[in-house]
Image 1: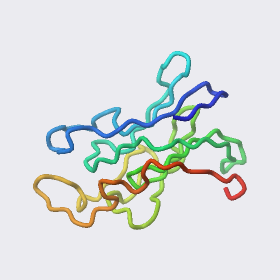
Image 2 (image 1 turned 180 degrees about the vertical axis):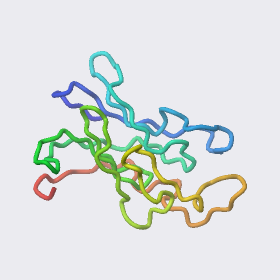
Image 3 (image 1 turned 135 degrees about the vertical axis):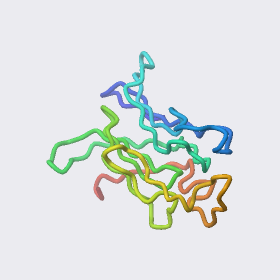
Length: 160
């Protein structure tokens, strides 16, 4: 969890859907693998951003949420939330409204996704690395352990 007294919101991620066998649970499995921003007093959800709809790899997106304030391309200060996920993508959201600012692979070994569509926020899957029952996928990265596990991160504002 992370808390911002300026917005009075708590930020946290939800886990993966079950069962792991993806053919048994059609659809996006809404609210799994989601970053939530909730009012600290009422619990009301201000936003929810789903990182891995229909997670078939068991990535459980509950890693740390890093809060920072940084200048955007126009020089305006923004309240940001950065989350390096077990799915191999580092997400940055505007923490006031949950809008996606950026989503980039941690490195080039991540192959389950080709990219993240910044307009829809949806990851573009590479079907070669899917876990369908009718397909033998090999060399999936990240593995079920995830690319970035639940260890803590840090942010150095001097290195932007």
